[in-house]
Structures are given as structure tokens and as C-alpha cells.
Length: 421
Image (cartoon, one colour):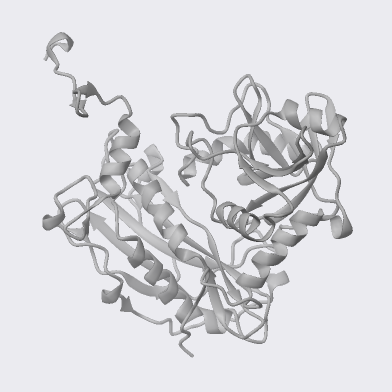
């Protein structure tokens, strides 16, 4: 068909062309119809939904010794627990029966979609052994919902988020008691649900086969480097995410291209890159973590400032949203939460004028990590840190989060795992 005779797709009461194609596609794929999630490949009545109640369990006959945290994190290989969960999907039949089985290798064809077209997304959350003896996940519903958004952004199949949450709890109910024993309060493990396109067919197209898998592993503690995190702003010829891209989705393609700049920054003595965006130099993320600044504005009010979500440039971090909610609820009389675009020049100006109070990065891996310095185009920004390298507000927010995660405070965000002894 000649381009000149193609009829434009229209939407809305006035028949205007729908120019927001990506957002429209994502929204349509994650909506429900008759109680079933639409995945954009086949009609809801023609496929089987992911169903955690059908989980098939095959326990290992050879459980491995559980190392201590230091030993587990000392090598070059991530140490995983005894079991994993897998589930496969095809466009013809939908989701198969999920399986909990011994941890081990996956089998992929060399032409699998994920290996050529980056059809992959993942989540990250932790399981915590509380000081009250209970095992908890922190807001797994948020991770499950965000993973649904990520999967449909890259044309992987949708699923009911509640079913993914149940699978996460099922894995921890089996491996949690042994790998996070009650004798180790304050310890945690890292859960990594991942979805990949497995179609063994070359060609730039939506995968017609996929696999969901969940692993559980040790992870080093990274939330408090000595002296605080030191950031180097991103080079002028490199950007991590852009408006209209996929920075708001947790896909593997967000991370690989950023490693070169991060590696160079570490050679120069910095911990991470502070990613700037646009000619204005908007502050976005610190490495793969959300970035926050506490300053006094020019009217004298203390603000907790972070980049907004409405332009879909940064990730909607679970730690981020939790910290902002806690700040609004518990620090309302001390500081104001502000979500807006702000530039590195504003940070420089706040430092020059003595208005810069503190800064931190936050995410699943780094948790709540104080930032002590930023280097930008030959200029060094010194950021105040207080006792134990933590500013006052950083320490308060970090403490609120830890209390919920480890059961010192009973809170609905801490979801208790029913353990199978």
C-alpha cells in the first residue's frame, strides 16, 4: 500500500490522531477484561493465565551448605539458594504450570530473542530476617506491578501481578528458613524475578515464546561506603535514559550501555555516575538508584527534592516511593517533599550559598546511601554529612525503613512469609 493512502489511526471524541503510541500500547496491555489480563498477543479467552495455585514443587535431594554472608559475597559468582521458580509462556496457549525446582542452568537456543533483541526485564527485592524472628518481603506488590509494566513495554507477555507475588512468597517459604535462619536476625537475601523472550527465531518482532524465572541469592551490603558515596556527573556524550525511551521500565537494556561511564568514574575514585539529562543538565539518577537532595530553598524552607515521574525518564523505585511517603507522613513539619526537574547548576548554587543540607541515593541494592561529594566539569561539590556519614534526614528515613523491613515496627509494607520448616 502506498504511504499516501494509509488511513491514520484516530482516537478520542474529535477523531484526533493518537500520537502517544507507546503509552497507549502499554496502558491497553495492562488493563483487564473479564478478570483476565490482556497480553496483546491473543484474546483473553484463548490462553491460560499465570496461576500460582498450580505450582509444581520438586525439592532438591542435595541441599548445599549455607555460607555466611561474608563468604557468600567474596567470590565472582552470585551464590543462589537451593531452588528457583520457572514458568513458560507461548502465544498459542498462554502460561504453563509454574515449577519450583532445584536451582540450575537454563536452556536456550542460540537464536533466542533475548540474546539478539534485548527482550528482557527483571525486578529486584529483598527478603529480611526480622529481629522478631519473622521473615518478610518489603512491598512485593509494588515490584510485581512494576514488572508487569516493564514486560509489556518490551512486548513480553502480561500476567496478573498478584500471581507473581504469590510465587515470590512460595520460593521464600521453602528456602527462607534454611538460608535466612532465625539465628541471623538482620540478614537478607535478594530475589530476582526475570522474564526473557525465548522464541528461537531471528527477526525484529514480538516474542511468541517467553520464560519467567525467579532466583534468590546473597547480595553484598552497599548502602554505606566509608565517607559516603562520591558521584561523577555523566559525560557530555553519553545519556542513560531519555524522554520517550524506556528509563522508567526495569529492562536490561537500561544498564549495559551505562557500564562504560561507570567503569571510568570508578577508575577516578568515584562510586557512581550522577546521570544528567539534556542541555540544562537535569539531575536524574545516581548509577541505577534514585537521587535525592535536601536543601533550603531561597525562601528558607527545607525541601527534599527528587526528579519527577511524569516524563517517564527515571525508574519509579519502590524505595523511592516509600521514602517519599514516609517523609510526607513523618517529617511534614521539618521538610517539604518536592518532585520536579532540577539542574546540577541549582545544586552548585545551593552549595555556594550555603543552602545545601545533605544528599542520598536510594534503591534496592544501595538502600539509602548518603552522598558526600559530586564532581561536575572540574568543579567539586562538597555535601555535608553528619554522624556516621549520614545527614539528619537521611538517617531518619533510613531508620524508618529498616524498622519496617526488620519487624521493629509492625507495618503493612512488611509482608510476612509463611515458612515451611
